[in-house]
Amino acid sequence: MAGDENMVSCRVCGETVKDSLYDHMSKKHDFTRDDCAGYLKMFPGAEVVSPRLQAKYDAIPVPRRAHPPDPKDLEIRFAKIRFPVNYDVLGEHCLPLPDKYEVPKHGELGEDVQHVAVALKHRRSIYIWGMPGSGKDAMIHAWSYMTRTPAIIRQVKPGTDIESWFFSRGFNKDSTIWEEGEILKALRDGYVTSTGRRIPYLVLITDFDRASRDQAEHLRLITDSIQGRVDGPAGHIYKVLPGTIIVATANTSGGGDERGRMISANPLDASLLDRFERKIQFHWMQWEDEGPIVKAKFHALFQAYPNLETKFRDITLALRQQILSGELHGEFSHRALCSILSHAEDIIAESDRKLPENLMGIAARVWLDGLPDEENRLVAKRVMDAHFKTLNKLNLTGSEGKKN
Image 1 (cartoon, rainbow, N blue to C red):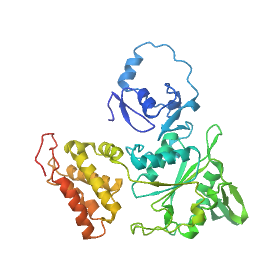
Image 2 (spheres, helix red, strand yellow):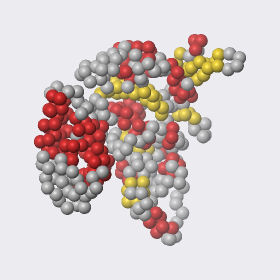
Image 3 (tube, rainbow, N blue to C red):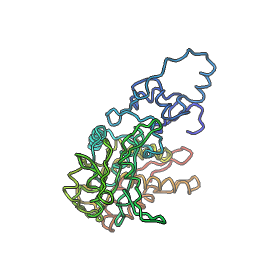
Image 4 (cartoon, rainbow, N blue to C red):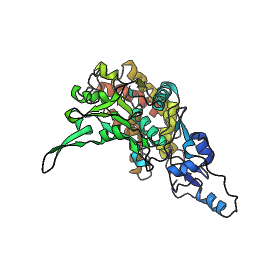
């Protein structure tokens, strides 16, 4: 709510709250002190109270505050696990926070996330696999952002020269030279703060199961449990800074594609996969977690359709159950759900304040057309249409309209 004199935004999670961040930081992020000294060191010049409240404070004489606590005492709780915040790491060296992200708390995914959080706390290498759109990369992005952990992300693509992540051949006027890559520098040196403190990086490698045998071999030694290392040119060995975290995300468990939907996935060498200290599967989000996220992302749409949340909850559960049972050959991920809802908002934006009949059925096409054949599209459409027919609609001024 940009420009609202009563509101203030939290730089840790991006949430906007009324008047003051003190209660928000204590309840949501579980800070160990009431004072915001550490928060202000992380985000110099950040507001902790709204402009309206600050104006009132400025008008009242107040006693001098006690000496601020050591910023190192500043902690947050992520998936029930306490983490220190690296207040002296600049935000641009961390992964960005996903839009409207909330840590999953319910069902299997809530447990999956907590296991990963424990592994991150103890600086373990982790292989995370699961359905598309189950939040594998999003969780690591959010953790890096919220704990101010410096991070680098790389995506495995068929044919990519992974060796160049570590070093590459260069030339000058006299000879051939070896140039150090960004990943090698991060693994070896860590992040160096303004005070000279070295903080180990998190290296996130996405689509790891797309790696060919040659590509995967470049990553074997960096996950060594005795001493991670990189083999450099001419036999030179670079040691990985202790505490560096290697996280790989994938859609398969390393045995190749079992469902016929991730055909570019390759089987991974079992000895390479075994080097990851933790292997954790991610499941689909429970609606208790997913519902509030989509409502926050598509607030205007959910206002226009009062029972939209109930309908999409039932549709999501039904479609995913059919996918798991093998009756529907496709994916209905969080991304797919957001694709339909965002297309509905786009249609509304072009509809001159009049909502078209069967808006959701029309918007669903952007997902249905991606299913592999007409038979699967018909199965999915029947599930969705049964709920869309009883979807109550309001016009854009708020008066109740007829049913689709």
